[in-house]
Amino acid sequence: MSLKTVCIALAALSFLTSAVAKPRDIEPIVSTEWLALNLKDPQIALIDIRTAAQYQKGHIPGSINVPLSEWAIAKNGLTLELPSDESLRALVGKSGMTRTSKVVVVTRTETDFGRADATRVAWTCQVAGLKDVAVLDGGFTKWARENRAVSVDVPVIRALTYSGSIDRSSVAGKEYVLGKRKSLIIADNRTPEDYFGITAKPGHISGAVNLPTPWVFNSDGTFKSQEELRSMASGVLGDDKSKEIVVYCGVGGYASTWWFLLTQILGYQNVKLYDGSFEEWTKDPKAPVQSYRWH
Image (cartoon, rainbow, N blue to C red):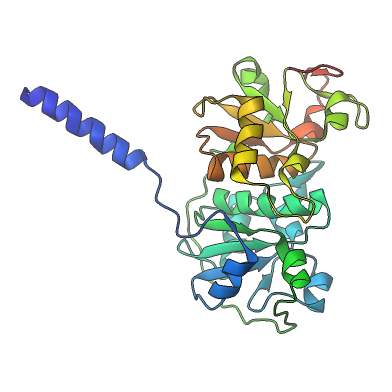
C-alpha cells in the first residue's frame, strides 16, 4: 500500500470519526421508573413545561417550572416560533442548565397536543445547543397516575451564564421549503382530516405526504414501540435515512414530535422542521396548496 493511499485512508477515518455524534448520556425517551431511580442525579435538569398554576398544584420533586410559552413564542403573526438566539441563551441560563446537563422535559399528556409540547421544547433545547435532552414517557400525567412522589416545594435554581452554540441547522423557513420543495420529502404531521382539507382548509403543502403525530402515542400518552414507529416512518418516508426531509404541521407542535423521533430514535440524518408550518404557508398566495390527494 502506497504512502498516498495510507494518508487518504487515515484522512477518511478521521472524517468519519469526527462526524460520529457524541454518544448520549441519557436516552431520548425515559420512563417514569427510570426517572424515579435517578431523581437525585445532580446532572439531571428536570423541566416542567406545564402552566404555573398546574405546577403549583403539584410537580415531580426537584423539577422547575419553565412553561411552554417561554420556549415557543408568538412572533410575526405566527403562534409557535423559536425565540431569538439571545433569548434562548437567557432561558437556558436562568433554568440552571449547562451543556453537560441531562435535560428531562415533563408535560401533561391527556391530549395529543399536550403530548407534543414535550418534543417541541426538546427540539428547542437542541437548537439552543443542549445535546442530552429527553422527554418523560407519559409525562406528569403518568407519574401522578402511578402515585409517585409529588411536591409543592419550589427548588432554588442558581441562574447561570449560558454560552452554548445555537444550532439552527434543523430549522427550515418558508423560502427554503419553496425553493427546494420538489427535491425534498415534505411530511405533514397533522391528522388525515386536516391533511385532506376536510377539517382544516385548504389542505396541505403541494406534494406533501401524511405522517400524523397522533399515531405515535398509546392511549395512555406513552410512545408506541420503536418497531411500530420505525414501520410508520419507513412506510411513509422510505428507508433512505440520508434523504432530506422537512416536517411541518399546523403551527409547529406536532411536527416537533416526528422530528424528535426521526432524528433521536430512528436514525434519520437530514430532517428539518418548518417552524412557521401551515400557518405561515397559507399566508402566502404563491405557496402551492392541494387537497383530497395522497402522495
